[in-house]
Image 1 (spheres, one colour):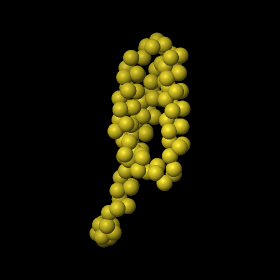
Image 2 (cartoon, helix red, strand yellow):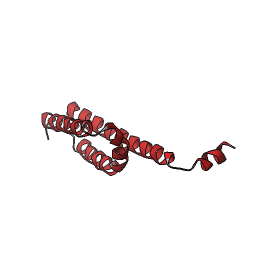
Image 3 (cartoon, helix red, strand yellow):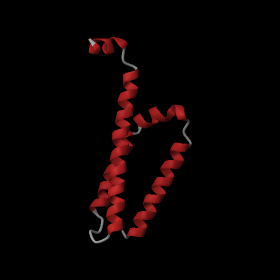
Image 4 (spheres, helix red, strand yellow):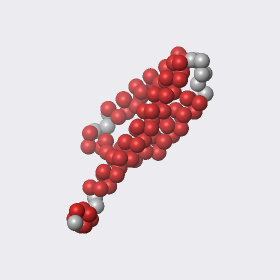
Length: 101
């Protein structure tokens, strides 16, 4: 895969992701984020494969692969943080009081 093709795929993926998320009402962002953590993991694995197959002599391929892995990892980690916060909202208040004592 040459650098231009990798950049083109990266730009298409970014545009598609933006369009999909921008069409979701704000009230659904948290459930959507927590429900799609598995997709973030698949994206991260795909980014690692792209980075692993990058030509070591082509800095553009390495940079795109690194950015994809970094953003995929940040997205997956953020999804789990949001899920944890969302689940904490549904815990009973008794547990918070016990932890404060």
